Image 1: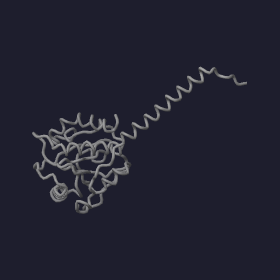
Image 2: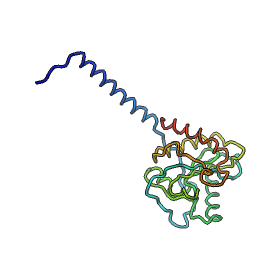
Image 3: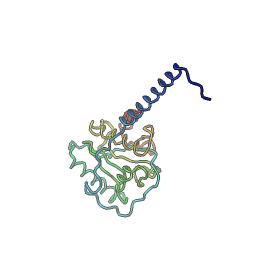
Length: 218
């Protein structure tokens, strides 16, 4: 036998249900608003990369961190897309011809004009699908678990251009989103090796983590 609920109880339940529904809608709206759009990243073919000297190794798991580098190349005042492509070719030539590596060591490169390029072949495919990565050669002990991004220039005593910084924030936010990496897991090269890299960018890692977290809706 069912017992009718008092009208006050029914109304109270309706109010609570409505509040819960609104909370769900609000949460969904926040999640949608926090979605980070994909930045423009030129793939290896676009900037004229050489083919790897041997096949790259694919790691069938997600990376757990991002490592920030600077190239230590002179700070060019040419912020053009063409220069970003030249820089990517210069890095690849250095890594293959001088270091003896099979391809560019880093997964991605960020120019002083804020133009992003794929570094090692296959890195962009892994990022866009979010389930695997290629093994890099940017940081000993971390190459099969960390995405490495080179920022063009040397920042031992000068700050990077705003365009580079803004692009780095966007890239890190998108990469964290794609791979499920926490913003707290963004590091500098010198956290894992005896090096000055990435210069003053290392001092700004707390700012970078906070800004990325904000972009992700945290």
